[in-house]
Length: 470
Picture (cartoon, rainbow, N blue to C red):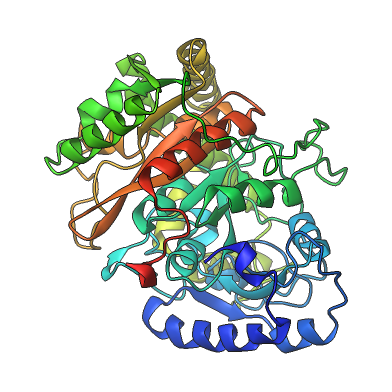
């Protein structure tokens, strides 16, 4: 499914698509709330030359939508209805989009599996028993199932790019500040990005044109001019220099991956791509996850201190304000989220800030310097986006903190620590499940990132493919 598929369609056909979505959700469990498509069509006055004319769009449930319940898949926000739209919602609507639903996610964005939503596990369209990855799990599942050509997510660690890998679609995390985060329920402010899913690179480039730009309501948004990414798209790989991160390759132990990856890189070389192996200091790669865990949980603890059952959201009874807050937060959050708040609070204790939180910030800076050094001589860095196929919930998922988990499953944190643009693109099928690569480019060089991704897409022939097409 592509955006262009809706250019010449009667907009009223979206009602039928909405019915398909409702039916499919019985298997996928990817939706928290459905939007009123009929009402949007009734008020629709968009010109047909609008970039997203009549395009159905899914919104992750942490993106504020005026008058539509927005829960971030957390019980504590089960009754929360925003009184305003996020900037990204306004931009999409102004471009002609029609919103079909709010998608399920790991609670408050805290998770990488799609198992931690208040509404339950989100199912992978390729195998309903497997996970989608997270936290933007519902958005990924709906694009992969051919139920929408564009879905919005957020990416704090790899929360768009990992689900894209597990679900066989394109996942984009642009440069930090490229898309406004105003109206997005935060996780960790220094790491959060608005990202999105499509089925092909041309749609990905167009979507960024629509959503990017300065927003005075988000002081971290950039003044940098937005390029015409789609019209400038060029998939010629000849002479492109790509650095393959050896740390990730070496960390993958699944014997099914290497033959597929080697065959893929050989095709790139046949197109004139210059491929070289690049190694980042292994100690820094091993430090990615613990550094992320400290910074993200500390920032989340501060960001969500307002979810107290007093000002808004679900309220549990108590004899005084203190007891109301304790009861509301105890019952309103899952045990996993409460555990993260404990870690975050510990890191922010006055006696711990220098030896834990600020030390993690310093390590982050060293990691970013290593990324800069690795990118010096290359257009992009490339690595497999995941070290395993999408696992089943009961599969071991890093409990022993082995190298596959620490590096192969978490290396995309490099894009969040640096804020540099990153994209996941499917390249093959292994045992009936999609596998993908991830690209990392220099700050605000989305054009080069899209160009290389388009060349890869041309090589694989997977543009526009969804589960229903296989």
